[in-house]
Length: 141
Image (tube, rainbow, N blue to C red):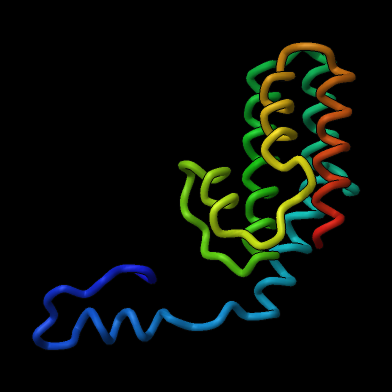
């Protein structure tokens, strides 16, 4: 809606809706999104990184997949908040971030691909990938 082009709106209804939602990204909202989601990623009990490693240790790949999905969701929420971007939804988030974000973690796409490729392999690879992703994300916050 934000980037849509109005072709026909004789009563200015769509124009009013578009204007209503064309507001700057709130500093308070940005800070809350970053704080809440970073605490979910790491450093707290039960943070996603710890849950992923526990699930790997017990061989529960369904849980690993579920927790990594949650980890990635929070990771992108932080990236979009740092860049004051609206969330594009669940599809093509890497492409959207690369195209629109001014600030991306170092080796952003490579780290995501490595994490996803390491699922079900060596627990040390997954742990190292998680640590790298978190450290690189911290650098842009």
